[in-house]
Image 1 (cartoon, one colour):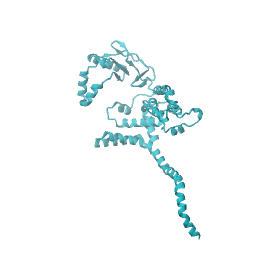
Image 2 (spheres, one colour):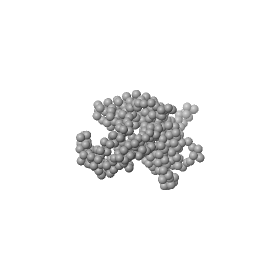
Image 3 (cartoon, helix red, strand yellow):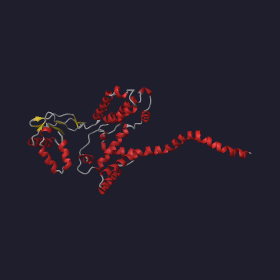
Length: 354
């Protein structure tokens, strides 16, 4: 794997050739005008089977860049090998050797040579903690600020920072515990409490009216699973999701794949096996082909994914609405209707007694 950076790519890119290529691919009209006004892309990610193939691809890529008036930035380009063991991979561009690294941040996500997400999750937990520290005195514990304002900041800044890229996380018990600890660290301070108060986290959430962050993460993961099912052939994300890698597993306990984790999550939370979920998605896609409405497809898939999350909550509300309604009417009946009822009944009772 090699992360390539082009030197002054935005200034050197030949715009005339770029518009011609887009025109050949069918990008025309308003879309082409929008791309021409906002086009800015300076990095490429290349993944090839072996080091020799990657070296050959880099050589061709560098030659094409030189022909188009662009230059390879060897100081910012880096190589990385995805393997549990340290494997050397020497790549050269223009006689210069690219440095080999153990981790690389690409589009906000930290990739490591071991292929694990632990450091990425820890990084976002640390980023969320830094956000809370920066707003601690001015927002989190400020008494003049209402709870509603604090929770708005929690929903718009803190929670998105903590859960960035959560769709591809494998939620182990350690990760779930750390996410919940980071979540409650903010909510307890909003509620004016601490761990010494010995109040359960569920009570604090109910008092603030905030749903568990783990529930939001699981819902986002299942939503992404639905997107993967509906991706047409040729989309890289869908092809990687359906791929079956060849080779031999190393010794020891196998790692939990995201595919196995999200299938188990769909079964435990929704009671739906992967085959049923995929068939439901295919029926939604078939409906889109018949009706021609992609918006309707997204609504149906979203409703199918979230139905089982809201079903239990709706049933609970329906079972408690009637008792709550009767309890609210009881004081009104005792104070207003009961005296009138007794006054109307009193003459009848006296006549019957005589």
